[in-house]
Image 1 (tube, rainbow, N blue to C red):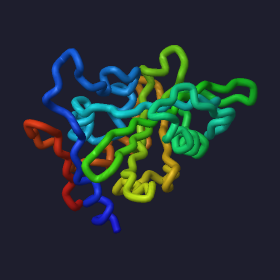
Image 2: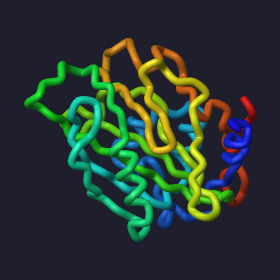
Image 3: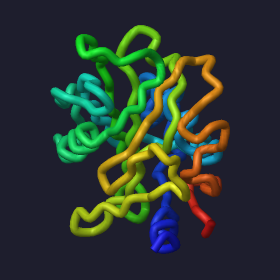
Image 4: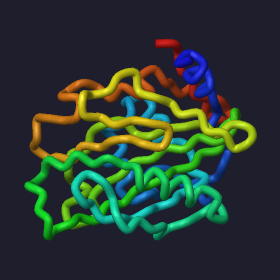
Amino acid sequence: MKAVILALISLALIGGNVSAATAPRNLARIPVAREALLRIVSPKFYRSLLISPVQGWIVVQGDLMSNHLRGTRVIHSELDGRYDALALELANNLQVIDDTYAQTGTRSHAVLVHLLIYQIADGTLAISFAHFDETGGTQLRYSGAAWMAVEKANNKWVTIEPLRLSPHELRGPRTYTIAVETPNSLRSLRGNAAPPIGSSVQVQPNPNLFTHSARDR
């Protein structure tokens, strides 16, 4: 089954041949995306995302209570709201392991859950990540594996699962886990290991598009 899922990520993100004045939006134009995604996708896939155009961007805000979000709501919507429900479901199912400070019953922290949509040759690619929406939130250390899925025919999503999970990592079709720690922390959800998702994804230049491929692992 994993081999089938990996085969589905042989895809092409549309790009190239666009003048600088009309260049499509990429991660550089999505606030905090570059920093937040740095440790939760593989380095090769991260480099490909830096140059791939983002078709849609949805943001959900919620308050962290214990290790889940409450009071979630869409605060930024694109693509006529087609992916708002998916973004909300991911936010409601998100597990946050907060190691930055002791949790108390009187203090909650705002969290933003982002959903990025890419148009690809095989359908639609969606990537979700989250971060604390507060002063210094973008400088915290985030670990885990980003949620990724490909939308096929009949609006069916095929989730791209990590090769391995940590003992405390909750994962499912609409569920993923992030761990949040201070910037100087030596720990992470997976210690110092490289992110396990998309580790063999490569960008193959083409005059008209960027081609992503994943080998069997």
